[in-house]
Image (cartoon, rainbow, N blue to C red):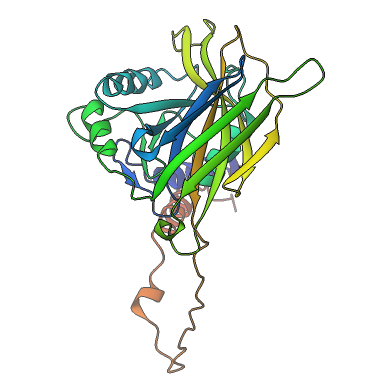
Length: 304
């Protein structure tokens, strides 16, 4: 009987949880923009600088080698890239993963901290618009993604630069970065964090259950450079899954100040009356009450 009661309770509770509106783009107001994209190859020293007008749109795709509908999302992104200046970054699921070998722990932790969500497929455009799932909000994903990209960032960035020196036998690689930005264009008390995303240009993994064999632009490591607009750091690179095609991409993200918290003081009117809203059970309680009612109806009477 107890097992029956718990089964009914679980059924009602889960049936009361609303499904996410997959396909509807969401404006992210609690996080700042992601921009940059300056990159060099990891197997040779180099340097590159881009002005803000030269920087591509940054598209982050959360994916997995077992995710079949992720293929539809990536095909749509490839179509959109043909007519837009964008850079795709594919973050593969890592934490709790048993199949996909292309993700990283720091990549998953970043998604959890920044987006509070990491379910494939999810695409984030310039760090400010998130679209979950492979169901389009309009007639196609291509149309959705083009509209998501049609939201230019309002940041006074002048340039982003990256210098990279390949390490020797006993030394690690060294990077130097520099971001020139008008701080007055940032939100009040906002800051900018810089990162290196170590990207594998192409990985061959035919053992995934989504039927895909070649995976492009997989983010294999995220290296946090802190809040300094410029600096030099020695870094350690991961091993490539296969080949020798790792790249170093310099990305920046705007960190918004923590929202101010306000304390609400309730006015307790001790007049013996009960507010109508307070007297009604919350909607989340109704399924549980229903479950208890059903279990009571199905409970057998003990013999006298």
